[in-house]
Image (cartoon, rainbow, N blue to C red):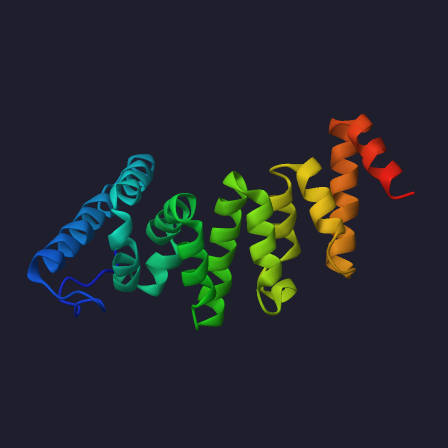
Length: 193
């Protein structure tokens, strides 16, 4: 699999000095080498290692140089997950600012799921703050996010305005939580009676 980063593509916005441009070319060269590995498992590991090694001050510049296919493929997804775990506010702002609707939905989903692993409440609040959030973040993604900590997610979801997708998510969380921890489910339901 070849990466779709063009070696001769113009410099990303904000790159002023040649040492920074050289560092960006080195990072993209590392990605090309990782993506050229034939073994899919070794390629995935090398791409994950690549994403983890990128300094936070270079992430936006690298993202700007990746093609749309790479942004939603392994390189972009791994880099975005890494960025979200280290700088969730910056990654979420970048994702929400994407203009291409299809790309925006994919990167928002990536950020939401990665952020939910480390800060579920913040991730859910961010998703709810997005304009047209029910269309942007599918119900399945919300359920996957909430699955990281059902007991924490349940009151957060219940505090949102009623909607078919929120009602469905509450019922799903109650079913799952009752199977895991009937006592916690009973206590939560008792608060609402």
